[in-house]
Image (cartoon, rainbow, N blue to C red; front, side, top):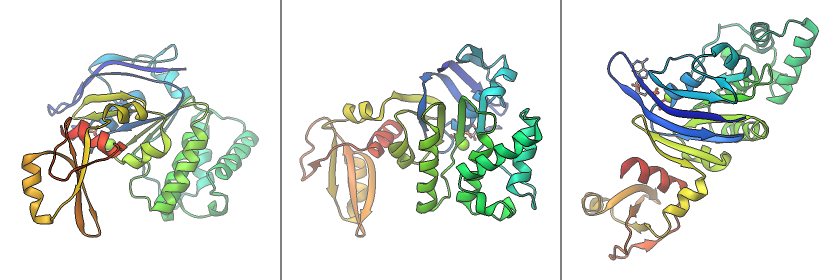
Length: 288
Ligand code: ADP
Ligand code: MG
């Protein structure tokens, strides 16, 4: 099954053009949709999840016309929204039970087995008696995955699932997603390059509603071969380098800025050529 997005556009009533003629195709496996805040990621996810109307364009999932046949999409979709609230005292089995009924799992015994299997899968069995509202960020997101998996979805959409997780929680979450992504389409939207680096075999970059890249991370890296140059500078020199070069990133290393610039010829001035990494790809697409 493939998800094909063609010439998709969306302008909100306030005039913000959130998607501008976006086209790309997503196959089985983990797909990373990378973009800074405000890029249009959630808008795109919500359109695919049939929660927001597009203005024009088409989206096709296998032979389902996503924008028209919403009911058919919902039957094969698992969706973890960017933010989800829960009632204060609800515990995981209760909420999963409720959501399973909504998804059409009518047999009580079947629901019980399903809930056990899901809690096992996301490693929340030992927390099944606690209120979800008392969960840590990582536990909440794992619960979010459990509910998204009800009904064996063919398409799973997770919108910024790692924002706010600490490194340990993030790692556990990565392992869970990697495990799920083997047989279905998983779209992971994120502004965190590491998410895509560690998980995704295919990716797209969007910014200000526009598609800047779609393909394999390795191809994007290859395109930047020989174009990325690094130098450690003094803080007070930053402005100079910002105006003189195409600066794409700066990191502090032991308190000193280490900058990456984009240049198709040797920039001189003690810059060293370095292999591009995915952050260079992201920032060069978004900034240049
Ligand atoms: P992202 O998820 O990449 O941060 P969004 O899709 O949430 O981006 O937002 C894209 C743009 O659309 C932003 O400029 C945002 O302010 C605007 N936007 C999002 N939702 C709405 C809405 N319901 N009404 C008006 N503008 C919106
Ligand atoms: Mg968003």
